[in-house]
Length: 103
Image (cartoon, rainbow, N blue to C red):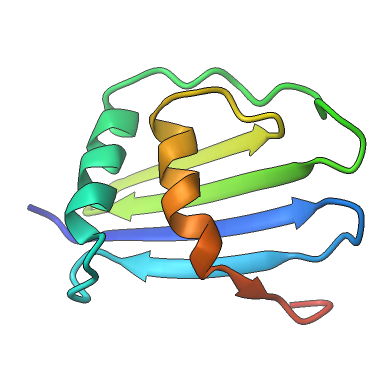
């Protein structure tokens, strides 16, 4: 199985603070198998384009996934619909750290 790299960025919200995390599935992460399974589900499904902002001060969630030669990008806005994209965001969001302005 090819290594998976996932970059998650959350932006927007009341304060406009950007949060970011990068996860590599080969780093021995305890959520690695779950992340791999969710990426597999996303790669094999159609995810609808992001809706316009669903609520004032809602968040935008951007994911970039690299798996071997495959590159996937997804954008979702609050409120998040159920499905593998939301499940992956829920795994990644607690790991996200603030991004310095301009970073």
